[in-house]
Image 1 (tube, one colour):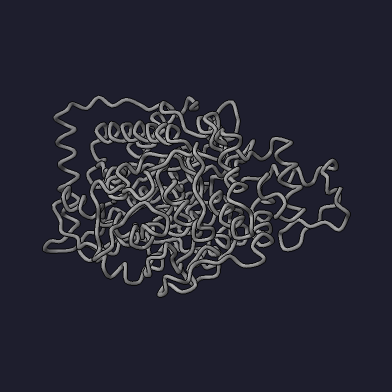
Image 2 (tube, helix red, strand yellow):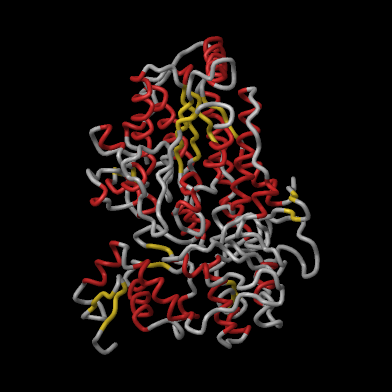
Length: 578
């Protein structure tokens, strides 16, 4: 459901004029690239989500951002043309560094195609219609007033614009400021949006009314702390939390409708066309396609589960109703087949086995009485359902790129799908990159965001595309050198990586417990700390109490822990549990 003001306007240029204008954009952009004078600059502006912001391990900090695809792409382009490019870098505790430096990377972790414009998409919050949401705007006057990540990324563009700004508003502010300068510079805009229009369905975590969590509550309830158990059970009973994200109904609820995606995409591009004062011949937009979110490293197939869980209990085997990606001992010929579970479900299974629970007890998370636990398992059919939605989004992206003369499609989605599935494998030395969590050397610890090497792979694809489109020769990133310093490479072949050295917080602290203490010795693997369940309980509490619906539930007089207090952001109680 798209508000009426989202309807795209119509342009009636002849096909001849469109072709001529497209050619003029390419020629104009070339004139800013290597040549006799180097007089003109190119401003690089980026719109998107966590991939563009530079997230890894569910964390945004300068170490991650400076190793992400956009930074590497800009570094390469800067060797052949003067660039204006600025990152809104975060510190290790995710505070904005140099907040008064105007950013040109406007990508915000968690954005979808609607929040790009400050709109809340109705389905994922259980509403009847989409609506404006100030949480997706930068509206703080000074850094000490920052309320959320949109403030931290987009500031001070709201001050420059003289109003609260969404990502798209911020981009137009930069473009129009550039046009006012009349300095002959050019703009190269990267637009990679739409991943989060399928991510909640694929990851099984997030949303509101209810918020989805891919944790097997009944299986872990005896191990987690009483305060967390009460919060989770009460939240489930009141409909605030849902622990079955992979039912077909939940998946359908959390996917953006194709017509909504298409209409909003065209509206966004129309705004960049109509409201940009910089001449179209001085603006080029790289529109990136989407990879399959349902086959990332975060989602564990039968081979993944047996590889890791047998390290704790050699007798582990997935239950009969869990559809295998391949038969034991056979190579995987179709990586898009088989059932999946989330990283968080796997983490609980691993911890339960290490805590002494039996294989049968752990497998009851996946199957009970011969019936698959649909809420915790993404079936092969559900995986393909999500893939089909991504295909439809990519068709909309391709069609839109053909309708706008200065928009160029970069089919990075197909490239990543083919590369990580082994259809078109990429080898670096003796390592073949794949979709496997940690073992595949392509993802950070969260299994969602690429590793340094995966980021460089994306950058090289974009550089090759721009070299082809604009007839330039930007140098590619050296993958061998990147891999040599990448903390997400499994160097001893035991399935675990050392990970980065920065101090973790939030869900990242949970991820860091699943790392290799000695990545030179394959006999030394991840062993969870003795207080794992207490630490995990505190991590989840900190994450959950920040959700408005959970906070409202905690503050209710009817809440079972009727005197809730907080210590360092974690609810605690000094009254006896019921």
